[in-house]
Length: 340
Image 1 (cartoon, rainbow, N blue to C red):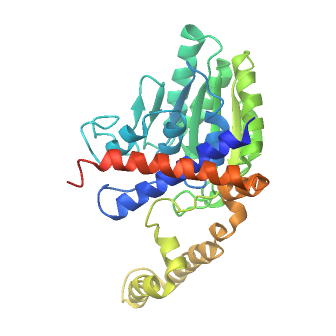
Image 2 (cartoon, helix red, strand yellow; image 1 turned 135 degrees about the vertical axis):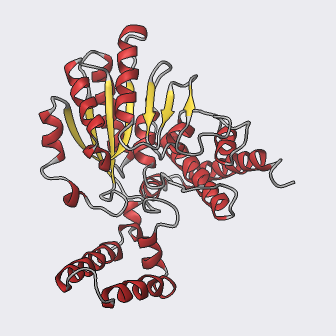
C-alpha cells in the first residue's frame, strides 16, 4: 500500500469535484449534482487495487470512481456539460456514466449497482477467471429488493463480487433507524455473504479490508460486503436544504419557518396532534443536522491522511500542486469551446 499514491488520487478527485461544483453553481451543468466529497478514502482504497479485466458498478456518485479508474477526466467533464463529445455523448450527465473499455457503469437508480456487479461477476467466472466486480452504493440502497436479491444470488453462485456500502447515515433526509430494523451486518450474514465493518474515513483501513476481500474473491472465496462509514460533505446533493439552514441560518430559516407556521395555523386539515407530530419531525431533522459532523476535520478523509503525511511537507506540497495543475488543465480543456 502506497499512501502517497492514495493521497494523490484522493486529492485529484476532491479538486475535480470542487471544480464541478463551481460549474454547477454557474449554471453550466444542469440538474441535480451529487458529489462524492467525503467518500474519497472508500473509492481510492478499493479502485486503486483493481486490475485490467476487473469491473465496477457505481451509483449516482460515480465521478470519483471513474476518475480514479483512469477514465479521461476531460471526457467526464464534457459529459456533465452535456457535450456531444462527452464520455456518453452528453446524454448520461453525472449519474449515468459508462465506459466499455474499463468495464465501468453507473446509474442513478438506487440499488442498481447490485445487479450490475453480479452480472459483471458472473461474466468474469466464464470469460475472465480471477477477475472481480465491485458494487458501490449507499446504505439507503439496502432497502431495495434488487440489491438484496443480488447479495443472495452472489452467495448462492459464489460470485467474485465485493459489495461496497458507503454509509453516511442519511438517505436524503431519512435516517437509517426510520427506514429499517435490525443490524445491517446480521442482514448481510443472513444472506450468506461475508460482512466486514470498516472506517470509511481511513484509507488505510479501507485498503486493507478491500485487499482481503478482493483476494478472497479472486481465489474463489465468494462475495464480501464492506460496510464503510463516511460523511457526505455536501449532504445528499449540492444545495441540500438542511445544510443551507445550518450554514446560513439567518437567510434560510425564514424561508422554512414562515410557510411551516402558516400551514400549522391554517384552518382545516389534520388534527392538532398530527400537526404537532409533523412539527416535531421537522425540528428533529434540523437538530440532527445542526450537530453537523462536517464541521469536524476528523471526518474529512483527505485532511486525515494529509496529517499523517505532514512528516514530509515538501513532498506533500508537490503532490498538492501537481493535482491542482492537472485539474486546472482538465478544466481549461473541457471549457475551451464553452466560454468562447
